[in-house]
Length: 411
Image (tube, rainbow, N blue to C red):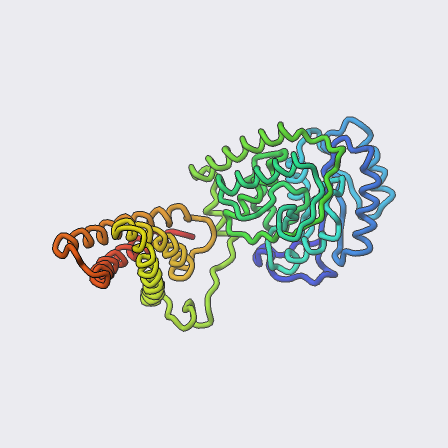
């Protein structure tokens, strides 16, 4: 097996007949199920997988006959090998075997084969083609089919909600035992992963997302193994500690994610006109045009919302609500369209800046309304809107300068 040239970052598509995949099966005391699962897996791979492949059984210091069975299978079956580790830990096994692999793509799945193997080719194909960098099976994505008890379903969904809230992840299922990644990406990310057990998956995915890598999700058919020996409570507790450690490391800068992002992230997309969008020029002038177009749309939306709210609210309350709603939408649109910033990085800072601009706009518009009503107590609605439009124009200039300053520092 030969790895893709690092200088290409491994993203050029590989012919299927030349691509190589190593699938790791981490095991600990799985003597009862190991042989049946490995024979089923290798039979499927030989019949259905168009890539060169190898199965590695990674024995995590088993105390039963698991290692002996694995060694016998490696003799009986072509393309099966065994790696023995003296310590437990799924993450430890994956890290050691993946870093030592000379395949183009590395993958793993749980020994119980709870995930239907028909999802394997959709998992691997985007990595071989260069479309994606990491691929995961998801039990929570639209189109997946899952059979498991309500307790595990609740814990899984709650855990992924915690990840979305605390670490702003975009992937839907961190812990499904069915994942793959390009080997060049694995070699760069794995040294940064500290966990050696169950949190390994989550930590690896968070680092991949923060590095600007593309994560491909495959909806899977998944049946819970009633005989699983995983301690759900202990695992959940360990995972929560891992979330806190990872959040702290990313916040303090202890994890050098910026350097990894600069090395691995896909280059920004540009239009045929050299950075222009839909015929709008690039650079400051183009940003001003796009910002102005969004501003016009926001102003129209603000005016419509203000007039609708004015039926049931007084002028100040209607202005507050209309301004708050359009301010959030304005910041989101400017992130993507005006400044070309996508993803979760910097999201909180950008919206906090938008909120500050909102406070400035609220002071300008609210003060203008107060001054108008002081001078013209019975001012007509059109006059209120005219005064608000002028105040908003000034606030818009403040918003552009503030957003440009913070967006410029975004990767």
